[in-house]
Image (cartoon, rainbow over all chains, first blue to last red; front, top):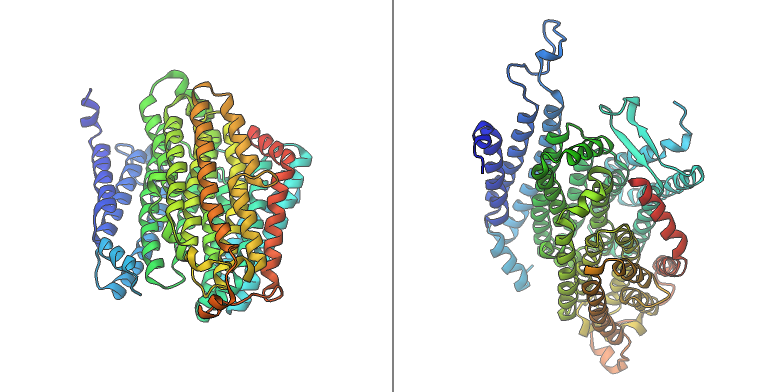
Length: 125
Length: 505
């Protein structure tokens, strides 16, 4: 194993660690709010990864200022655009999940999804 | 640019469905219902015209959005298979919506019913976009729209069961789409493109040099696992029975026959148009699909046989059918994928029929869904009983009906694969036996005569007259005809699919 690459690209490695953290939180947590936080960490880590892919050292954000139009002045703008799109998606999904959580909480007075499943199986409501 | 006017239709379909969704929000329930049916019909007709055009001209075409050239612009790609799928999905959706209309009117609050059509229109839009798009990131966005609208369709009926099912569905779907997104980002990092055809060129170059083999496989694996989770392949199916079992009948029919199929179609596109089928076959991913597909077939059928609730039984049967489709991918040949595509069609036609007819059977039995309470339901509601029997026979794989053809295609595809032939054939045989056990049990129960005295004691038992729901009888007739067409005239459809699949490569 060559760990040199891992240290050279430590930002990407951090993004992947964050992804794993978020993913396991979304999968394993019982508390709905913690699940949603996990989901947000997971998606943000992907955006971090994407933003890193578009970054070129020493270049500036792709907003034309002072009439400089040279390609060498700016970073790759496409990943930034993708990140924006992705943020919109994850915000709407988060809103939907939170509204579901509110409905479940009003009905069962708990945020624990396993507890809710048990109560549903018992045949209440 | 000299595009025939018909070539614009796929884009019109997406735009029309996308905008009719929010429009339904401000309409009354009745108007929204009419708008929804009109939109589905219009999209169906447009897809038919596109299909005719593509078949006549004998090829596929790429539609550049806004005339931006290849690496920058967004594209739509249309071939015979895509147009046929869009047409077929519209037919199934139309029939499911008409078949569930009466139950929706009874079960949903009047003020909320128009919101249901928002979801349905958005769902259709995302399905059509998934079928046609040539851009991976656009596909991701529409996958999410699909997930959100499917979740809305589950939770529109406000009960503890549906809310819990919708939450579980969302959690599993989010895990899947997270993996899919990460896979797409990896692939973008490797190739620098988002359009499928450009990615394929770059992937071929990368594979030829042999560098970056591991990252490529990781990207492919992430996308495959993500879409497998979203389409409820065996170990990831825990949300499915509740979601299909307790939502309204149209939701169950549409979710089982269309939503998961949209993701599977995207997976086929990724196989053929993004990565290249040879690279997929040389990787070990197809073996994983093969094993989990067979496990799903067995587990789904066994769980269905143990189930006492008729809706949940049909839902578990869906798990088994998804297993068939992934087993077809696992064979790693074009014939296997072709069999999977045919199974998508036959499962969609049959499963929605089963859900709609099961709703009819429980309607005449005091809205009970337990199999024991459905004794004699086939006599109380003859059209639903007949339809359920046809659906059950088709699921089992009885000749004349569509399920038979897809099973034959699976078996034929397996015969060419020496090391996978035996497990496939054994799995097909075992799963057919299990299908017979639980579907025939259900058919026998609904055709067990019940004494009038016992019938009178149970509250809610009543006879449904033939003319009580004429539209549902019409839906049954259409579904049965669709099944017979898929079962008796399979040759031209298989040829069409195989020609379309050939143009994918």
